[in-house]
Length: 124
Image (cartoon, rainbow, N blue to C red; front, side):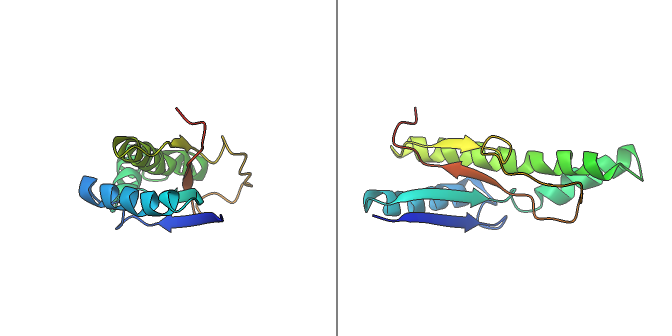
């Protein structure tokens, strides 16, 4: 079968029920025999909440540190999606960009920041 890459934004990942729906969509492709890679955004509103928090601490935060803070929203989403997939019997493992060797430059805050959850046949 095929390698399928799916991308889900913040609205699709915006609540536990929506995350479970994403998991069910992924499951359908897996059951059809496809390998699936899923890229997700932070839950709806989470990135804005995190950036606002940083700006409360320092009104002019370092852009690199803002990227570090913003990325934690995606890390939560990948973990939650992997947990939802496990619940319905789909083997999955979450990965950050660093773990799958996605390289970036120093253009902080000027690029999309997404992380991926990859379904693997040997995942535990």
